[in-house]
Length: 61
Image 1 (cartoon, rainbow, N blue to C red):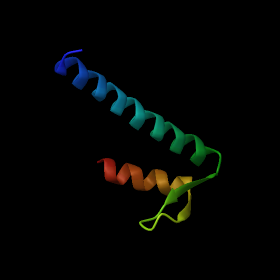
Image 2 (cartoon, one colour):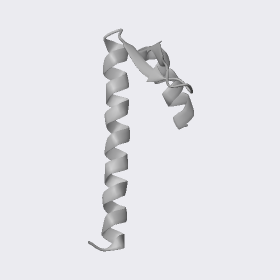
Image 3 (cartoon, one colour):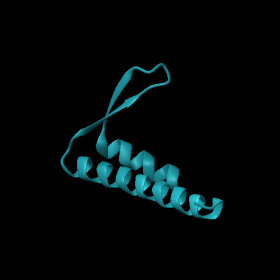
C-alpha cells in the first residue's frame, strides 16, 4: 500500500469515526440518555447527551 493510499484510508477512517460519534450523541440526546466521559484525571464524568451534543456542535463550527 502506497503512502497516498494509506493517507486516504486514514482519512476515511477518521471521517467514519467522527460520523459515528455524532450519530451516537444524537441518538442518546433524542432518548434523553447520558454520556460518560473521562475527565483530565481519568475519572468518569456523566453528562446529559443533549449538553454533550450542544458542546460538540459549538466546537465543530
